[in-house]
Amino acid sequence: MILEEAIQQPGQREQMLKESVMESLHVAIPCEVVSYNETDRTIRAQPLIRGFRDQEKPQVLEDVPVFFPGNFTFDITPGDECLVVFADSCIDGWFQNGVVSKPLTARRHDWSDGFALVGFSSRKKIVPGINLNDKFSEIDEKFEHIVSDVTEIATVEETQAIIDEYGG
Image 1: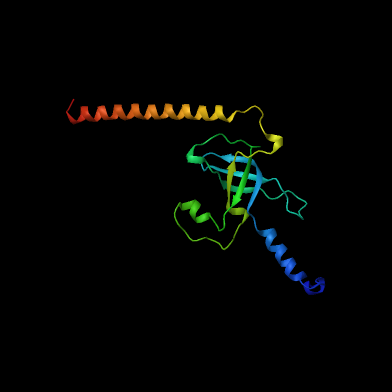
Image 2: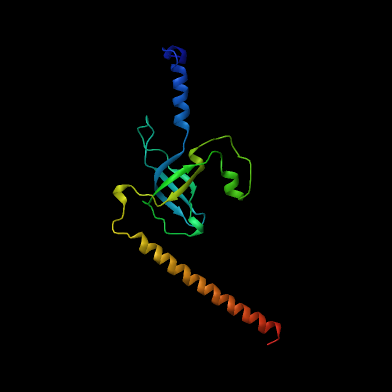
């Protein structure tokens, strides 16, 4: 049967086209981490919501860059949940070179162009008893320790530079 024969009502063709476009447009989806590559800071992620008409699990998303706020890293393990958001255009050129680049393909909002925001949790996976104020206090203490270590190192380096300058 050809498409024209399948379309019976006025506006049905436009509706089918609209549905087709919307099904291929990806904005964001909750996922589960399958694996984490610490060197590249990327994950493999299994989407946790099927398409409206899909019977199978969606394909695993490969090589998804992970967002770390302020470059502050944390442990990521298989089973962690995340939200993958999809870029407007192909990110491959930027991801490989880190500079302004033209998209390498014309794809838009594609499964291939996601970024992972790790830390979202479904209600089933919420860890009870975590006090965020305590966690922020731990981070503040670690930061203060790092700052004092850097200050101490700078002082030693400055002292060594003075010694070297005066031939000591």
